Amino acid sequence: MKANDNLEKSNLHPRNLHRSRYDFELLISNCPELKEYVSINKYQIETIDFSDPKAVKVLNKALLKTYYNIGFWNIPLHYLCPPIPGRADYIHYIADLLAESNNGVIPNNASVLGLDIGTGVNMIYPILGNSIYNWSFVATDIDKKAIENCGKIIEANPHLIDSISLQQQTEPRFIFKNIIIPEDRFSFTMCNPPFHASAEEAAKGSLRKIKNLNPKDKKINAPVLNFGGQSNELWCNGGEIAFITQMIYESAHYKSQCLWFTTLVSKKENLPAIYKTLKKVNTVSVKTIDMAQGQKNSRIVAWSFLNEQESKSWKF
Image (cartoon, one colour):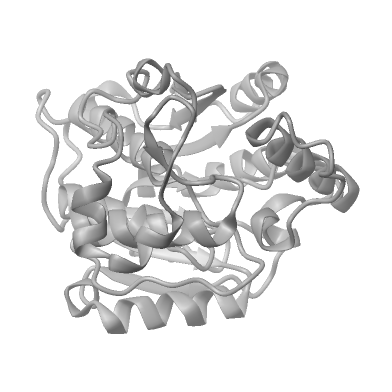
């Protein structure tokens, strides 16, 4: 953590609960196991070692219990442990997007149905979306183990049972096919796509991330395994651009069944190609929403095939 941590977090969405420094006293009171990972840094600020996957995992447990009514949450070793503040931002920006079709009012009810593509073992987006805005979700993944772990989280938090359904994508080459059926109407889709093009590139990315967190540690020469994530979480053939291109082409088959299709785009240089593909499939509206968390800049690209009248008449 840095001395200007508060300044960095001010880049988070105005409704994000995590714009201030973590209240470790409160978090530890709700999750006592967090205490062993908290220390005082050189700025005399309480923090954890964010390059330690165990510390990050326990911090997530504490945050979910304290702010999002999740009594049990756990993920297996070697899977991605998501930073909750940044994930919450995606949810808040989608809420703003939906409000544009609802007379400026954020729809805050269970009839809002979201589709989370690649929910992972952590299921973080459906958890946050349900807790913050009472939305319902279909959460999908190609990884059977991910779906099984999400099932355990839902069973341990009974209030999620009627709000989140799980579906495994059995054909990895598809994204929406096999998932969206004719009677479905999704208010939005969301996705944090794998952004590397190979396992080697993903390993280098994980190593660079850890070195950024520990710039003075010259001994770091290999990524921590359970900090990096599974292959399907981090990379795919063709990387981020190939995945998003496939997503856009598939979305054109479900034009009237979804108000907004959205995805995170990690690499700014991919935007021109993405816009070009969106134009090819005759989207009616395209929006790019910039996000910044700490040193990382990212963005959401959202597109819709519905005109203004169709969007305004969408039922939430």
